[in-house]
Amino acid sequence: MADDPRLGLTVTHRRYVPHSHAHYGGDLVDGAYVLGLFGDVATEACIRADGDEGLFASYSDVQFRAAVRAGDVIEATGTITRVGTRSREIAFEARVVCRAQPERGPSAAAVLGEPLVAVTATGTVVVP
Image 1 (cartoon, rainbow, N blue to C red):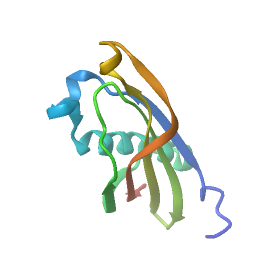
Image 2 (image 1 turned 90 degrees about the vertical axis):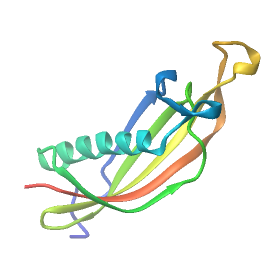
Image 3 (image 1 turned 90 degrees about the horizontal axis):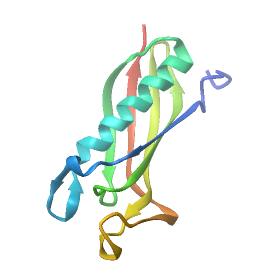
């Protein structure tokens, strides 16, 4: 299905990571938070590609590459890389695009000059 128009379809969500999600010392957020974002991205990708929310079946790879902290703004992107009869493979990447700077003040933050890749993953969804 190399000529399938769904191949390459990309969805991106951005979200502020609230301090209520800090789970560990140093305001670190657990990895499940980003996997939840990937699930939301996959849902929109399925809706756009197939007119159905689909169902997340599995991850074949997840790499935690950098910390996600409370006060970050995260950009989660998913791109459909394979289209099967009922399955779709999606490549995910979560990047930190803004980060809190508490050393400058309690509400200080900055846009990062270069987004920081925090998590990459490959997942499979199925649609009816």
